[in-house]
Length: 188
Image (cartoon, rainbow, N blue to C red; front, side, top):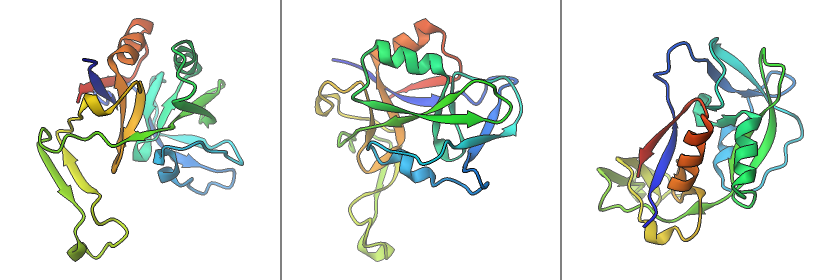
């Protein structure tokens, strides 16, 4: 059975950059939640990511509020892996970088969290006074998924807990073989 990994940002890399959430041409913060919705997006303008801490540029970075930003070579790798139906690359700019970067927009969410195998799962309840969220995940610790529910997906977000970006072992291996800088992979 295929193994899956939470594609995370290795914040322990010495001397690495850290990026803030994106802003538009007027310096107004771009809504970060739109990049976690699991659907195709069209942006009117190219967002700008400012440096929270200068340092070595990475090929993969999770920015403020965990927006995935990738170097063009990661976009090229995903295209070679034929993942165009699973991800979208939205042009972005990074302060001080002459070359373009891309927001990695994951296009699918899959209902696959294995509640029993997770360390802790909390749901929104009626008494939380958030009727729009009742029945959805409030918190998931020690995320585990049920691979049998994933099908053939190689890159996706989990339904109800959309923060994590899950990649297959195939994608993980390709990123490692390519020498992509910045990612950390946590088996789920």
